[in-house]
Length: 290
Image (cartoon, rainbow, N blue to C red):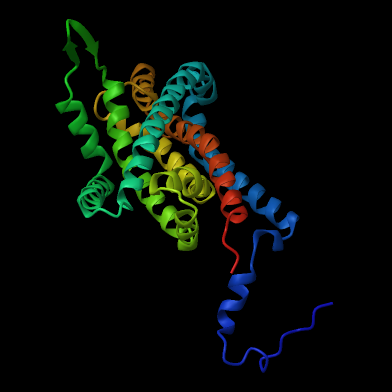
């Protein structure tokens, strides 16, 4: 058994920080973690019931369909529209990741003529509102481009993908810059002593080690991007929020407003919560031990 630490033994240190450094999720009993999850689920169900309950009372006075019946009738269409949101998020994340990795590598270039423009582009798109970038892409990119007699269409959803990929690119660039700078400089020196060029060192030694450092924030960024996809409905792209407004207009019932939007919220929660949970596990697994 470990002996208890007395105040005299920690004299000269910061005892306030000791519990914080040692506290891990594994220290919390399993039943307590399950209790917290079930409590959150129960609170969510109670909140939904409190919102939908008054609607039942109003609908029960006449032959109108119940709220649950209406939600179930619209579920197939909502599922297809939500799948379109997921598709937009996947394409935007893929484009933003590829561009962000390249931009992050340029940010650590030893040449200022390369490093400074890369930093400027990163900061510009990182600190720009996502909705403003969407509007710019929708308004500035033409609906079709003709090259060598071939017409390439650009529908609204592709413009939305480009608009969402720009902030993803900027955040990914910062993640890569931080991950590359976190690699000990001794590895650069060792590779140089073995005759590796800077490009070979970056490709074969440094970049593979950045994967575990970048993966948790990358997954968290994807969850944030998915929750931001309803913004594309403002610029005229049909997705789950557009369908929700169409459903409310078709049903013509005021009492359906809150339950319908809560139903959409649950779809996003069910999709994003496992990603958030997995991100937390990866952060604990790849955290640097002090």
